[in-house]
Length: 71
Image (tube, rainbow, N blue to C red; front, side, top):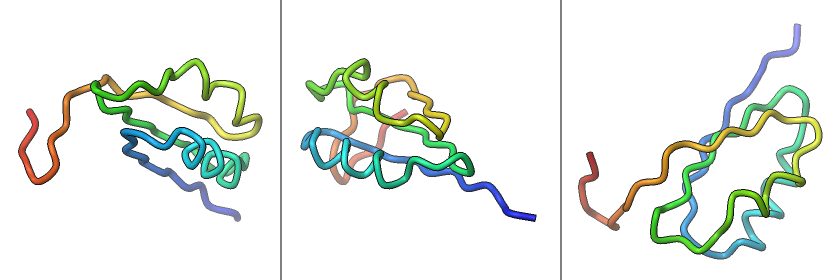
């Protein structure tokens, strides 16, 4: 039996790198969860066409600060 994988990706900038990563991870055995920082200019709709096999989910956007704590 082949297992299933879940990936959690936190992104802030560099949308082309994110698109390449999603393209590489696109597989029917993978679920991909993406958190886009609220300050990010990346539009979730611009990523929706990349994964054809994986299920992709977007979490609620929150402001995240490097080295900080976010509720």
